[in-house]
Image 1 (cartoon, each protein chain N blue to C red):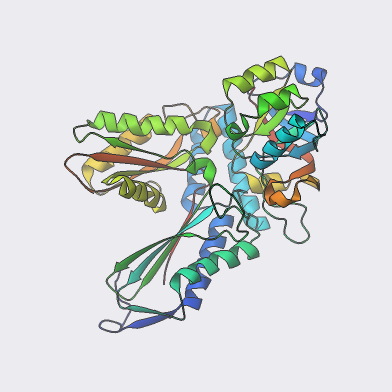
Image 2: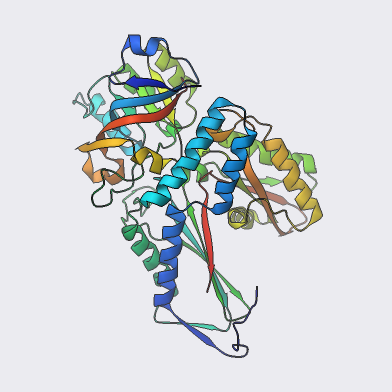
Length: 165
Length: 291
């Protein structure tokens, strides 16, 4: 099976032909957010504040290791998505229906993804060194106090993913 | 293992805590950057055995990931884990130069800085303030005869740690019930805990002892069976059954759900049969040094 090349932003036409189990190489912009950042983004939306991630962008569940001097980023594989399940339907309803993580999602998330034309990809768990080589640029855009759990904007090239939902 | 180093019988051997910090530092860095050789061999073998497209895609990338980690000296998983250090101390060893516990933690701290490990430890489970040092490590001490010091390290990521469980079975539970209990925990771990797993099983003791044994079992090498025949049989049956679950590498299906299942057992009470399962992910990180 040959991987499908996909570039961001994800549009309806781009994702229309994709099916479960497809191997994908994703290039473009993605935003990192995991447990604590999810909590903060959720609170921001609840309090009618503008969340740090632009709507329609892809959220990547990861907490990278620090970059060595001269490097862009450290190891940056995916973390377990199910811990974000409590927030994902709410975020999908508020303009964030695309995510990358690892593992399975709850039935609530799957329903929400259908409703809001979302997509969930699995990255390859435990492949932090591999994903490090696929990141071109990094900018911290919010919550630097969260260290590895801050929100980073990443430009990536050929991120290996598998479509799950 | 020889208990005494040459010429040291009936003598006291002094080891400085500084030396111990250095060993721990090496253990922690090595486990983060270099995949266990038996695990890498396993991936390569599994690659030939798999027919599922996704499974092959995953295994291929796992091999590539291990190569890149080694080449670029970067952790192969960003969850560099919580450090668990086991000290087996010969009873004729005198540890000099300050606190042993501090020396172990110092080793972890230095390694975390030098190898750019992620800061993954929070001070309090509710307040959750990051210690920024990856310490305190979890430490275990055992006093044994001799003049040697054996230090082992497990760097435990929490994708897999979150999926461990302990069940207190009845003492009359059948082998089938024990098997089903263990398989249910493996099935529940599923894709989220990064299969193929090295599964540690602790049987007997008390609730806490079973958990301890399950974790320690992750230090054992892949492929070698338990020396008690009935437990070797149970390990074999479990491996076969687990690989029929069709969870596969990272949960996309396939024949490779576990790398191995290792049992450690202990005496227990007439009224109980504790069964603990600790899930080690495909990037299981352990190393032992005898000093």
